[in-house]
Amino acid sequence: MSEFIRLTPLDLGLAALLLLGVAVLSLLLQLRIEAKLLVAALRCTLQLALIGLVLTKLFELLSPWWTGLAALAMILFAGREIMARQEGGLQRLWAYGIGTTSMLLAASLVTVFALTTQVQPQPWYDPRYALPLLGMILGNILTGISLGLQRLTEGARQQRAGIEAQLCLGATRRSAMLPITRQALTTALMPIINSLAATGLVSLPGMMTGQILAGVDPIEAVKYQLLIMFLIAGGTTLGAVIAVFAGVYRLTDTRDRLRLDRLAER
Image (cartoon, rainbow, N blue to C red; front, top):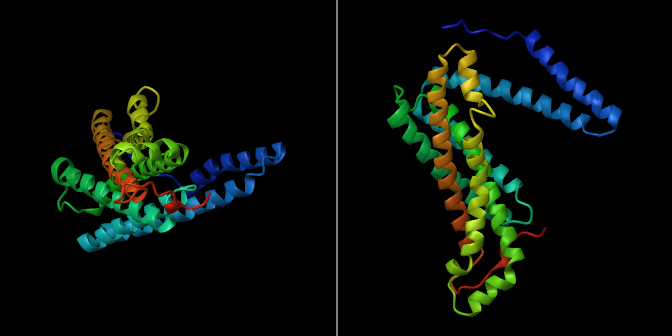
């Protein structure tokens, strides 16, 4: 097994020169993104440095309560991201509530399933395993739920006349909303399907690459990457289904009426 190569601040500084080059190119081409790029890079550096310190402390504590609190904080912040990504979607509190609840159920279930059946660290809540697994799963569930809810609300607006016509003819809200429900779920799952199809031939995922750079045997790194991809696919599907069906029920009522008045203004 090869030795782990440690990076120095100088190594990171040299890599940061690439961002400075992009900023200079933006100035020359008048793209006006140099300020946003540099601020984003600074935020990324500070956020990763902070999370590195937090994880170091959590690894030392090895407490299920602190691990659970950190996981809950990650999910709550992810819910805010779902709310922010909705353009003319569900009203803010409902978007946050549906997104956060869906991620909490899906990510928690899939992560605990992996920790207790496949990875099996001792103890099972070891933050060195639980939090990285949750983070990878959560990021993809977030994308799936965001896309699914956005497609659902857009479809309800675009197909309003057809949905209301079916409701007037006696269709239930579930059957009237079924076409856009299918479209929303297809949209939500397309990124993970594309990722599964491209992984290996087109791209080497970050976790697999990191393990290989750390000296892990490539075959073992492949096994872990396959595990993560399958967990992500399952978690994204579960989260998207919960969120989209909750969105359907929010956009309709018990009297089988379409309630676009529950959408936020564009």
